[in-house]
Amino acid sequence: MGIRNSGDRFGALAMVFHWTTVVLIVCAWSLGQGMDILPKGAARDAGVLVHISLGLAVLLVVVARFAWRMADPQPDPIPSRFGRLSEILATLVHYALYALLVATPIAGLTYWFAKGNALPVLGLIDIPSPLGSDPAFAKTVIGVHATLANAIVILAGFHAAAALVHHYILRDNTLTRMLPHQNSVAGKPGAPIKRPA
Image (cartoon, rainbow, N blue to C red; front, top):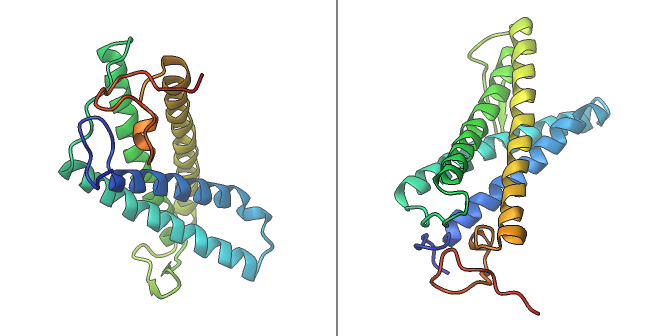
């Protein structure tokens, strides 16, 4: 498996970007959902710092991933029994996910700045708020941030479900070509997956 994408599968770097994004989103969303459970004080402050750091990491990984996607052509689409419409829908879902993965951390940062807080970057430096304190605006933006975060999880869930449908029902290589080891017929992008009898 090479670093770059081939005609029928994703390369190592695309896989790293994809699965790193998955892990970051699961961790950031889970921590965001459970933040109020953490006791106030040092534990919650640490949770907030980790959540912010995860959000910044998501933003950086997505920007790098999108730049790499522009430089490294995607594998050829796998022909589907649903035709061109399914390809268009898959493309729209991918770009919607990219948009949400950028918008959600930006909304989170806007909320943090609107509270008048400095932004802690990995616990090393603090970037002062360029917005000043605006509690009403902060309350609105945190609602937007939460809605966007939930939208990522829902859309990513549909994305994962579609991959599983391709794997177990349509029996093509859509899922396996994003995994390090491909159990399919070499050189045939839409070939059925070889399964043990």
